[in-house]
Length: 388
Image (cartoon, rainbow, N blue to C red; front, side):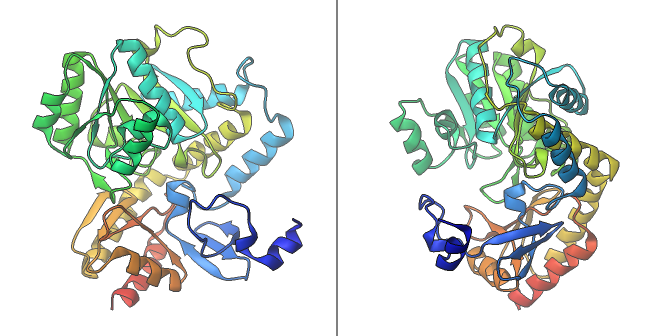
């Protein structure tokens, strides 16, 4: 179908699989926190494609890095080295304190899948412990550690054992459930899908102690809460707890698909050539976008900005009558006095984009790390009109 025919027929003519629900609008352009639809309507985006466009839409530094790299080298596969992947891996490792090993892939699910596989291979065990309310992706192994019957059903169909689920923030249960048969504990330091629930430091410390005691690997799934969104480069740093593996994706390249798994050398030392692989992982263009994103986060002081604007948003939401603000940094869950879906739809009518969560009373905010106080005021003003 030609572009003109498609535009005439409308969104219903698109041959997508019907698994996402009918789209409300077609966006054709974005800049910073603003999006424009195909009718010229302008929207404020405080969802960021589910925490992906971490610098806002089409940040000029990232756009130029992608354009320049695409003119230079698009792909060579992992049979050969490329300088931008090497530079990006070094930059990530340095931001994590050094001494780790970086594996590039294409998504958060792929990063988590490989993290679980690495833990099982290196420990020779199968049991995984995860946390109630956790979300880790849609591949088979990730579904097996994600909470929720409809997700676990996918793992059962694949014949994979389900993880043991620890109640959220129950440190004593974590200590009990991790034993000598456990390969890994996987946890989101700040849960995304449930509505930005941040784990307690005590709970994460209990997970660290249990893994150290039993030889299990501690995996922090930072696909949503990492890369600056929690106010430090990693949520691990914000909590002061060091895992054995960290996974990243979403905001790492400001909208360009990439995933990364960073593990300690103690876990990777036994790997052999061919144990892991990814055709597109570490591709030059994706790594150029990631490297540019890291440069902007550091160069523009965005980690401090996240903390400052987060505090401003929290105070403003509380003044509007929001009963509780969960989460850290710019991954926030606002407890609404009425169903969150109603608030989301009303804000959409104001051309303001926010998210919801599995908790039906939670509005989820995932604005760019460059979110300003002025933009926060625009969001708070729209929320005031909706809640009134």
